[in-house]
Image (cartoon, rainbow, N blue to C red):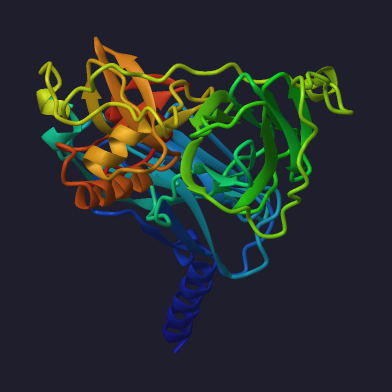
Length: 451
């Protein structure tokens, strides 16, 4: 009987001791079975600690070359040094079970199977207890090769945007008499922001008078009239109007003019085309003849110096150089398409704004000469904004600017499908504006490649 009681006491003591041993602390360290070279993954670790409280420390040992960064610490301090993650709690969470997480990043030059292990330490009745976290295996797989179209032999938000609407500026001339005319200049698909100017020049024996300035500062000098805005009207379409009085009849009134503005900080000029000439005045127009005699060279009440408190952009020459063909035919000298439109041409932005950090673009074409927006729209039906850059002896055309590689990749797919004339658009990468390989950019920005 005594032996039986003694045996029961010993067994009970063992069981009671087991309740407080480290074996009661359970860990669910969710390490993935595989990871690719250069890949970054979120790792979660659930700790079932029971009633243990107070100070605790956890150390996770990573294979040499792997790095880690914090995500969810549950009030622990997080450090990573020498291949080891260390999380320290001055007081463990009250919950009997909680989850912490961190980012695990694999280096580019590793391959094969590795092990991740750890230790959890806490204090029980002033005695340090160490619990081993079961080691987990992880297989590092070789990263898939980037497709060849990322480095083609031939030849920069891109989301599908609204149809391109070309800015136009047209002139309508209405004849009042043999020596009197009214002129209306209409700006359509207005996309100008900020400064703008319309300059119209009439024959030498004629003078002008403003009728409708659309809130512009109007100046008149000799045989010219100028409308200057510090802020162009925001309407999609707006117009100005003026009258022309000549000393002698004009069989066909010849007027030249241009719309000047800025785009991305660059001066732009758009020739004004004559849309029509009518034999009767336009409705609602003052037809009172201007005084005849010597042409009035007096300026309007607002002087030219007042109008030029903001500098006027210098005219930009129209590019008449024959354009190159598509990327694969860039060295051919003859191309049936015309590189510029003499009467309605918008210059392109050739120098992008300074860039910071890693960015991605889509290269659509490379050539040996510069072409403009009109050429791009006519030959390739491409009306989105683009930049040009000189690289390795080529003039390269890129579109878009993305922080995420996946957005650039999606843009490339969209452009390839929508513009069959481009021979293999592909993603390019930049570090602070300097062109680098996509692989380098992905490594620096810690992003994944997607085919």
